[in-house]
Every structure is written in C-alpha cells, then in structure tokens.
Length: 298
Image (cartoon, rainbow, N blue to C red; front, side, top):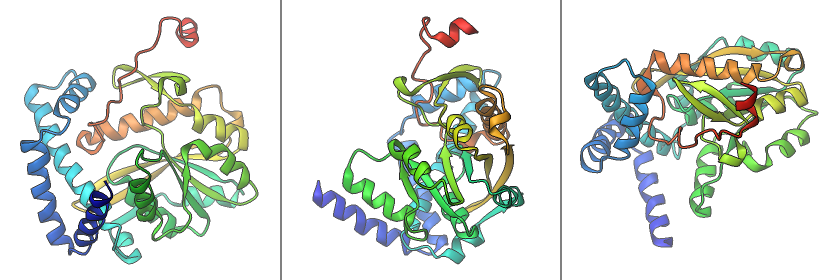
C-alpha cells in the first residue's frame, strides 16, 4: 500500500504540472476510461437521474449522464492541479457574484456558515473563497478512511490556505473555540449522513431524503449568518459562485426553516444544470422508518 501511495503522489505531481490545455486532454482520456471502459457507478448515476427527473426520456437522461461524467473527469484533474496551481490562477478561474452579502454579514460582526452542494468544483470554491476574504475560512470535511490519502487531501486543500480544514466530528468544538473571531465555515450539506446522523427528512427531487441538521443547529446556537453558494460551471475550468442569503438572524427562524431554504436553493441549482451535481454518490440509500417521530408529526 505504501508503494501505491507514493506512486499516486508522483502521478499527482506530474499531472499538476501540466498546462491547462494538456490537463484537459488528460481529462478527455479519463472520461473515456470511467464512462466507457470501467462504467464507474453507472447504475447509481442512471437510477439517481431517473428518480430525480421522472419526466425526462431515456435519451435525455443518457445525455445528462454523459455530460456529468465529462464534468467528473474535469473535477478529478482540477483537484489534482491543486498540488501546483497558483493563487492567481485560481482567482482567474473562479469568480464570485454577490460577495457583498458575505462582507455585510462580517460588518454585522457575524461569523458565517457557507452552505454548498457538490456542484461544479467545490474544492476550488473553498480555496478561492479563502483567498478573497480577510477573515479566516474553514472547510468542514469527513476524513478519508486511509490516513495517508487523507493527509494528502488535507495538504491539497490547505496548500494556499493554511490550517483551513476542520474534521467533521470536531465541528462544534472548533466553532466554539473560534467564537471570538470572525470566520467562514463551509459545509457541503448534501452528503448522505449515516442513519444515526439523520435528524430531518425533507422532499428533495421527489424523494424523501435524510439530512443532518448541523447547519441549522450550529447557526442558531452561535448566532451565525447562513449563506448558500451556487457553484456554476461557466466554461471548462471556469466557475462562478453565486452567493444567496439564507438568514442573518437564525434565532428568529422557525424550526427547520434554514434547512428547508438550503434544500430549495440546492434543488434549484441542480435543476438549472443537472449535469453539474455529484450523481455518482448514493444519496438516497436510506429510507425513513415508519416509527420515525417526524413521520408521525407529518
């Protein structure tokens, strides 16, 4: 395993040094491998798309899926590019719209929860956002099972923004520790929680979907502003993050109002560009138990 790891690091270093034109030639080759040769999670992707868009034909689903795999190949090589990419290159390729919303929350002396989905290049988004704000930014991440690969991913994420990762299990402790300074805290809140972590069920693409209420509970407890960033793909290797305010007064919001707004904004983003989301993860693998308290309330 050690040999595989060091070989991986060498390959990443080589790929990261490629100019962007060559990088995307490599991505084209990777697309052929994952789509045609290995059929990476095709059953999951097609099932997810068919269930999410029951009104679309098989040909429409196939077209979205194929474009999704092209995007996925680009994301893979772009993440590897983090090994060598410069700050200027990132900022030329990732722009933000309505960033004044974030700055206004800081002027109100509020730390911020930034909610995103796995849309576009979410890794570049975190790096770019950390580069354009004076306040300290953190990404809340679930560690990889292999410690060596996890350390390497942390290195890629923090190369241009030092000490900018908080392990998921340490989230609340870290935010309490930082409560006396202004911070940005990025949550990709669309991941599949473990069954024990699910504490809210909402309608998401015509399906009952389990969510973790962390963003709502933390925002309310620590009186943090909450925004959503819609990561839009505007060209190959070029992205725009559109900032929307969810709330600047979380303590005044009703129960589940914040998570419902997040789900609504995420679904709207994906509906506009369905190939832009991470369809290959098993987002709907859990089903709500008939004895769930929320089901009785519903």
